[in-house]
Every structure is written in structure tokens, then in C-alpha cells.
Amino acid sequence: MKMMVKIFAKKLFGVKYEQLSKAFLINSIVFLGLHTAGYRLRIAPFILNLMVSTFSAGVMWRALASEDNAANLKNLFMLPFGARTFVFSYVSALGTYTLLTKTMGLLAVVLAVSPWSGTETLWHFSCAVVCAANAILVTACVYAWKKCRCVGVLWGGAVIAAVFLLGDTIYFLLMMAGNGLLSVLILAGTDAYAFYRQDSKGRHTVKGSSCHSVWRYLFRYLTAHKNYMMNTVVLWGAACVLPFFFRQIFAQDLAPIKGQFVMPVGFAILSVNTPLGILLSCAPALEQAVRFLPDQGKAFCVPYALFLFLCSMTADIIFLCSFQLQIGGVNAAAVLTAAFFALFSAVGSVLLEWFFPIRGWKIESDLWHHPRKYVVPIAMLLLAGVVENLC
Image (cartoon, rainbow, N blue to C red):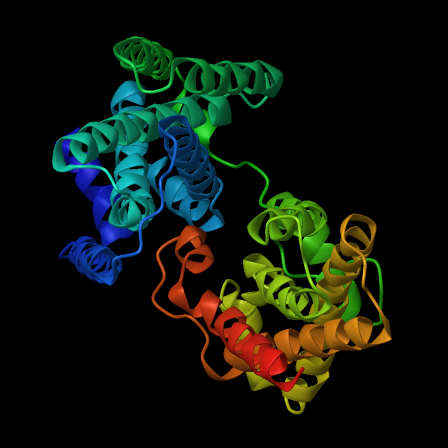
């Protein structure tokens, strides 16, 4: 089992496990920077546990569904292996990757701004780690149940209910420990081939048409990757509730000048649609083809930018409609501002993909959480500050 874990670990963390040291260094810098800034924000324990659980489950699911992992599994399945050893090695490697490189980053941010004492911080950190580990194990079980996902949804709902009702009491930890043990027993009887994606849906081809259309490719790529579509739908849901949070922040009173400022902030937040902004980075074969063929830069990048503009503008329109219903004050200038921010976001994302594609990633989850995804939103937030000063 040790040798099998080492095979997966070197694929995820690098030959010399350099990804672990890199993640530790970045998380330490983020924690010390935020902690010394003096900003404090109290977070309810059940909110922290729920946030860590859902985040870890999402990252683990994307890691399990990675097409790159599917290709590696196909090669490993040619070798003799024990089913139980393979399952525990695979889940342990992906779980360690999720916990140490992704979840710890979230905990570094949350704990850095929390007002808890040293003992309280240690307790809440322990509860959060237990929740993350439990979410990772449950996600692995649900992913293996390809024909019984409804049971997995009910299981996940029960865990969320326990997080909400039990808080961070000792009963909660006992329940999580029992749930984790149950997950381990289920994984012990799981077939190793349950983690292999038999049909890779991310093929970069357009069939049934002699006319090669970038638009057709982009829409088919989006529909073929259900998680990309789900991320876009979640973003539209966030566009609906953002005005409510803005109203709460400004104590039920948004003056016209404030309203004109928070709208660009909302546009900046809604520009964080990571999967649509990394199409070239996540498809090296496509990028190679686009760069190799003559005049393909313009032929691909212009439709790609228009596609991103359409997606961003859709989210911004939903946000403006919700803003008008809850707060009011949306006018023609707000619509033009939304169009400008959507266009700025689309062009910025395409330029980053063309001139600074992400290299050296291990699985798709590295792309989703790469720091480069915040470049365009931060630039848009700075632009929102400029808009406020001009108003």
C-alpha cells in the first residue's frame, strides 16, 4: 500500500513533494499577513464547519472527476493490484491533496481573522479538520455510487443537518467519527473500477458538422462539462442574493451614491467564473492546435471573448434585476457600466489565457484555485473604486 500511495502522491505533489512546501509557505504568508492586519470577523462555529465541509467536498469531487486522473488510472489498471489497497491508496492521496493544499488555505484565511483565543482556535481548527476529513470520505463513497447518487445526496443532507444542529459539541465530533468509520467500511468493499470514468466527455471535437465553429465548440464544451455549467448556474444564484447582502452591509440604507458604487463591486464579484476562463489552460492539445495553425489566435480569441462577455453580461443582468427589485436605482448608466465591466472581464480573461496560460498543474482542481483567477476581479474592484471617485 505504501508504494501505491507514493505513486499517487508523486503525481499530485511532485517528484520531491514540492507542492506541499509551496502550499505551506503560501498559507503561512496569508495567515501572518491577515492576522497582523488586525481585522477581526466573528464566524459561528457551525458556519465554519459547514463552509469547510462543502469546500472540501467540492474540491474532492473535482479531483475524483479529473480527466487527467482517469488517464493515469487507465494505465495503473493494467498492472496487478489489490482492490482494497488501490481504493484506500487512491482516496488517501486525493484526500491529503485536498486537505493540505486547498482546505488549509481556507482555514488560514478564516482563522487569521477570527477573534478566538489560542485554545478556542485550536478547538475550532480540530473540529474543522474533522469535518474536512469526513467530507472527503463521504464524497469518495458517493462518487463510487454511480447508480445510487440519490442515496449520497440524502447522506450529505444528513451530515449538513448534523453540522447545523450539533454545532461543535462533543456529540458532533462523535457523530463525525462514526460517520467517518462508516465511510471507511464502505470504501473497504468498493470496487476499484468504480473510480474510473469509462467515458471521457471532455473530447475537444465537433462531430456531425463540416463547418468548424468556435461558438459551437464552446457551447458543446460547456454542456459536456456539467460542473462548468453548475458553476455558472451557482453564479447566477449569487447574482440574485448579492443585493440582499449589500443592503445588510449598509444597514438597510443605500444612498444613490452608495448604490452606484456597490453595483460595480457586484460586477467584479460575478466575474469570478473560473472554469470558463481557463479553457486553453485546461486543454493543452487545444492550445497547441490554436497556436500552431495560422491566424487561429484571432479566429479563436475573438469568439472566446464574446462568449465570456455573454456569460458575464447574463450574470450582470440578473444582478441588476435583483438590485432593482430589492433596492432600486438601476438606470441606463448602470446597464452601460455592467456592459463595460463584462467586456473588460472577458477581454482580460482571454488575454491572460493567451499570454499567460497556467502551466505545470497536476489536476484540474489546481486550475480552479490558481491565484491568477483573482487578477481580473481585483483589477475590476480597483476600477470600481475609480468609478466611485468619478461619481
